[in-house]
Structure formats: C-alpha cells, structure tokens
Image (cartoon, rainbow, N blue to C red):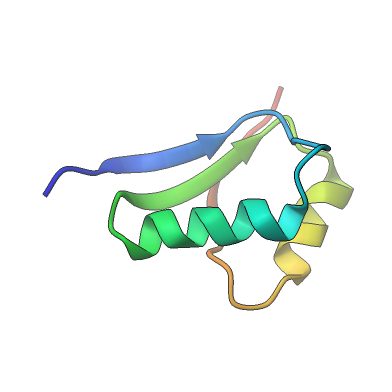
Length: 65
C-alpha cells in the first residue's frame, strides 16, 4: 500500500468550513492514504476550534513559523 507518513496542512483556509477540512483529513487517514496529520501557520484559535470538533482525526505535528 502506498501512503504518506504526514499530511501537513499549511495555511488555514478561511473559505472552507473547518468541519469540512477536518472531515476530509479524517477520511484520508481512515482510507490509509496518510498515517498522520499536522498543521503549520494556524492561529491558536484555529487549532483549538479543530480540537473542539468531535469524531475527527487529531493533529500529531505542529510546525511554527
């Protein structure tokens, strides 16, 4: 099976609902296309909003600017 170890979301997309982004990331991990997800250049508020969502994949990587 081919997969990536880490799918890193760089800039937060204000034009896409966070729930849609996090659901898509959970699907990628669930389909074993990526093992883990991470982010960079997200604000603390954006990170907390993602953590507050139920039934989504959790970030394992943070890349600060």
